[in-house]
Length: 156
Image (cartoon, rainbow, N blue to C red; front, side):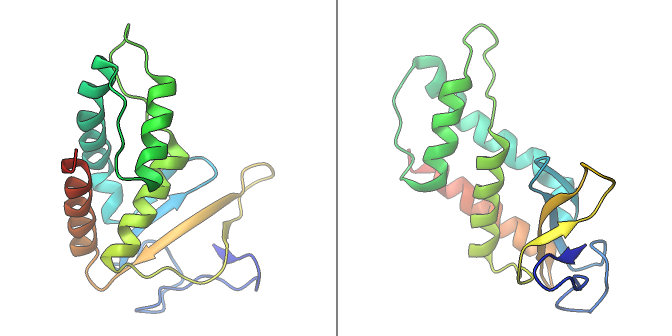
């Protein structure tokens, strides 16, 4: 992976390793294809998704208009409303909005992001924009982010 502006390889800001698999990686998120590739969050992403889905579903089923306190959570809600089908009774979370929410949560929890736009060069047509998050204690960042999400969803 490299910084698109400087063309330099991205290194962990804590240990200097040129890899997204060092012990400090909180998450390596492919923004182009909306998927997580590495880090503590990779193991726990389904917990975050399930938490949001469980909070949204009862309101979607009732057709209730919700205000989740503004910001990206409201955008995620709007996309869920637009994509909801009572026939299937499941929540479809928009990948772009979901990862914007994750970005907000990690930033508030103190994760470190390398400067500049990060690109993962792949074969033609497979390059990706990537968000990387690091910490001395990745588990703590993910735990804090999860706790913040619980609080955001409880407000309703």
